[in-house]
Amino acid sequence: MTIDLAQLDPRYFDRMDNLIDSDFYAQPRKVVHIDQGAIDAVTALYRELLPAGSTILDLMSSWRSHLPEEVQYARVCGLGMNEDELSDNPQLSDWLVHNLNQTPQLPFTDGEFAGVCCCVSVQYMQRPQEVFAEVARIVQPNAPFVITFSNRCFPTKAINLWRSTDDWGHIEVVESYFALEPGFRHIDQRVYMPSRMDEEHQDPLYAMWGFRRND
Image (cartoon, rainbow, N blue to C red; front, side, top):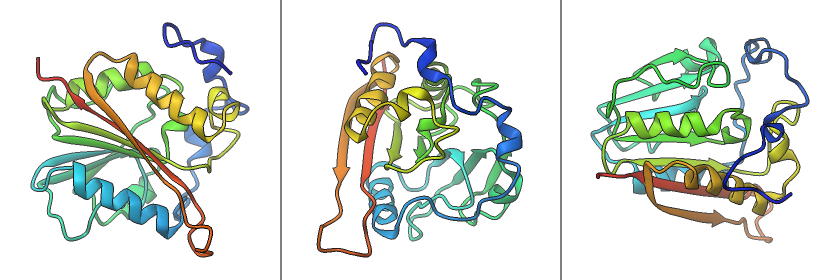
């Protein structure tokens, strides 16, 4: 599928299961969705990009955030879909249940956070342009928005655009989201591929991030 950066077709964001998300996520799923090698890559990237001692938003959060345990943050707020999962996340200082597909507006003030991360969940965004615009609003100038994903998903809840493209197409999808939001600059990406000799670590990890403009 060719991605039109000028206008994302609404059909891209339909799903196999269009029933209300709160029903699907009502049952806690206290499992990690990537293996330890991919988790380590996420943690290393967070260590590199998210400033210590600052306020962080974990967008589309769950029961684990994969932030580096040795780094102290002033605040880590989690926004997700399941209360039980969020309350069991030891790295969150506060959290709230919020459905981005229903309400993409974020309940935070302008410039409230010094960094935002979103791990293995971008494939479920049905209104990404609005969400990216909101993230640009709530982060401080030069603050990063870090997105990571792999090759796993809940297929019935992933958008059509995601399911119809391969891993490299997924990079193009996320790149298009950043390209359509003028609030971000210096968009970069990184790919972590497991060694063929490493039987324990098999999940690839793809990362893309941008920084809030300061003009």
